Image 1: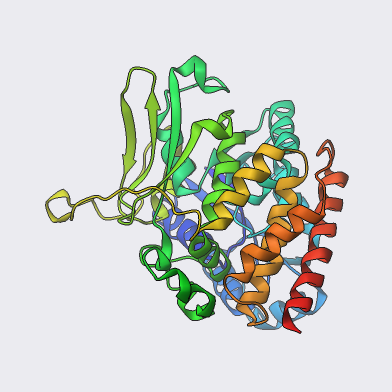
Image 2: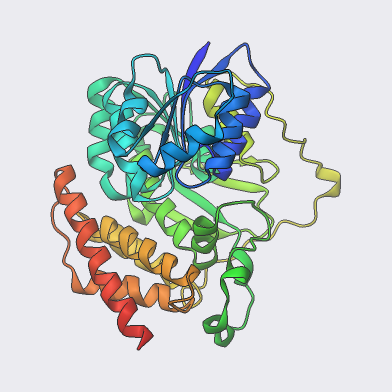
Length: 393
């Protein structure tokens, strides 16, 4: 029986995780959950799955959750704040932590889980983007297990040999190919992108995701962050990570070997597949995902990403090559710019402009400790906020 902490229980990854674990009550139990704003949904989860602890953002949220749970017979300890998140991620009662908090807010609890030697299921790509060296050192030092949940990295993981060494030369790997759907604007006229609305940007053609990650998919920043994540997960340089636009989202990623073989992982676009894979690894369990019907598949298409259309992808490669805190600056500036776009304070094409301006203005420092990473994150947010305000006037 694995006891789980589910960080980000009310998001799309949280919902898919709950769907998988309820199919296997003999294997998994929920020990702790967290949520930021969706307290009604969190109360429903607590009532159904009966975790021992729940963590919310602040004291007001804790009071609200207690009110929602009044009359529920199950006793759940309600806590709040960043420190409480780290505690439920590192608690001795927990075997496995699903790290599904979106953005930089997920870094500290993910790092706490790694330092405590947990089995970490990583859906929070920002943890590696911001502080890859620090997180991987914590994993090595504690003996933690790090398993990727992003469909692309999970596909790469499944396509590599069992127990592959860190660094792909020893596994005979030539390169990694990350597939990308191209999002909702893959073929839209370039001159129309400045007028894109938040509603259009979050309407992903294949995947059901949260608003922020849906915008990142539309700008292809999400793929850029995945390139950086793949660098850390698999020990490979940017020159051996290629992005291939594949609109059907059937092939989730591929690995090319030195002998010319290419191994790909295929499946319906449903996050329950990588979640079930990581939860049960190295075993396989039922995920609830329908079988891929090859007889009904249309043709599979592939194309190179257009960097005029997707400048955020170019910026991510540049940040990875720059090293140090450049990736943390990239991520922080993007988070602020996407939030402004969703609030209608910034145009869609302004997202890339703000991120590039922040990278140009703020030089990358060494990312040798968490404080330096967080300081770069704070500087980038301040710079992005200033730039966004200036673009509004």
